[in-house]
Length: 117
Image 1 (cartoon, rainbow, N blue to C red):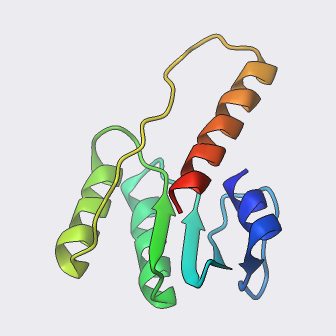
Image 2 (image 1 turned 90 degrees about the horizontal axis):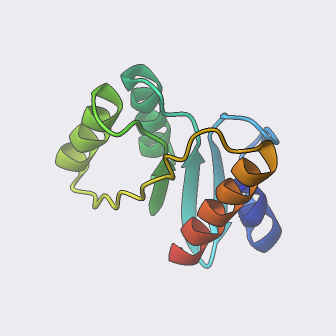
């Protein structure tokens, strides 16, 4: 959903943007290069996201992670190696929500992240 907002308000500069997927994508928005890599369940996935961020020399990098463990460790290493700042944005931990409510929560999170740019 965040990628949709960036496509609408900015411009995708990825050679082959993948709609509705966990594939990383790069955008121009307000004079910045913004990379969004939605996948982040494992350390390996976040390591791949970090390599993508580095290859794009982005101003802002957005990745999902778990609350702890290898995926978080990967972003902390990125911070230490490259001197970047990390802002952790928690996601709702509500369980047993309807699909409609989950969608609304995801939209709200996407709009919040977009407002930070």
